[in-house]
Image 1 (cartoon, one colour):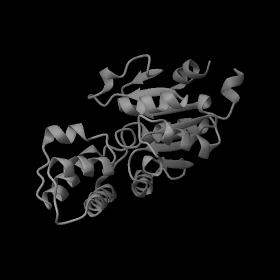
Image 2 (image 1 turned 180 degrees about the horizontal axis):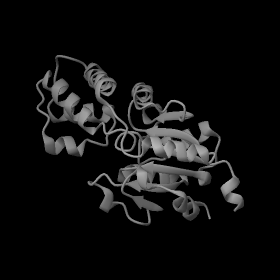
Image 3 (image 1 turned 180 degrees about the vertical axis):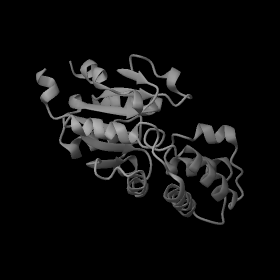
Length: 224
């Protein structure tokens, strides 16, 4: 029981965990890349879904190079487009508000660790109405390597000043779960219906359908 009284932290991936923003990225990429003559296909859009915006831009540039704009301009246009969609349309995924209250009532510090650009994180926090719960956030764009490298999760833990073995990480991608596991955190895989079956029980300490399912019994399993 002593472990339960230690300072603990919960660190959330953002896209697909807190907010269903995958469609925003698809819409933005389809429209912005079309302006430079690139047709974004559904199949390849699925392939790039968990890349950073820089990686996605590089992927499509290599697929069909353009000259009318710089890669940096195109990347920023995509980010700006997604930001506008978040401000207009974003809603919290099921269980987000409930789990924030639940974890805070149990003394948890709370952070975000995402591959998304840092500029979008405050917009999501504000739109979802969770600013009172989020203590810190970290973006992979400020790290040397993105998920599955552990850097972004380690960065969030350092900001929270909580040892990684007292952190639990919620992620919906295989690369994210690997990232959190490599950092030394307890890992919880969320069912995104695409990669869930690819995340083995050895990678994830727990696998749940959505945040609404998380409860006291899960905490006892993770920390006892």
